[in-house]
Length: 116
Image (cartoon, rainbow, N blue to C red; front, side, top):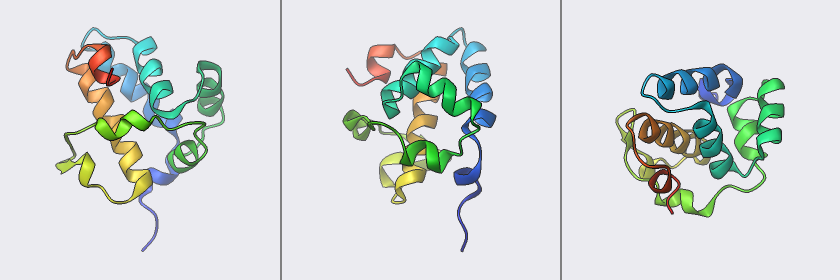
C-alpha cells in the first residue's frame, strides 16, 4: 500500500486553510504560526522558507528542527480518531497540528493550546 496522500501534500497548500479557519473565529495568522513553530521547532523565518519551497508534510515533519516534547500531551479526536491512538508517526504529527488548529479556532487560550 502506498503512502497516504497527506504525506505528499504541500504544507503550503493547507496553510491558508488553517489561517482561514481560525480567522473566521477571530484568531490570527500570527497565532497559527506560533502553534506551528511551537510544535515543530521551526523559526518564523524557517517556516516561511518551508512554505515557499512547497515542502510536503512528510518532509516538513521529518526535517523539523525539534518536535516539541510536550506535543504528547495533545489529546482528543481528529477525523473520528483519537490522536493519541494514531500509530504512524508522521500521521500523528499531522493530526497533532490539526488538533491544535481546531483548539485555536474554538477559542482556547494559547497557554492551554501550547500545553503550558
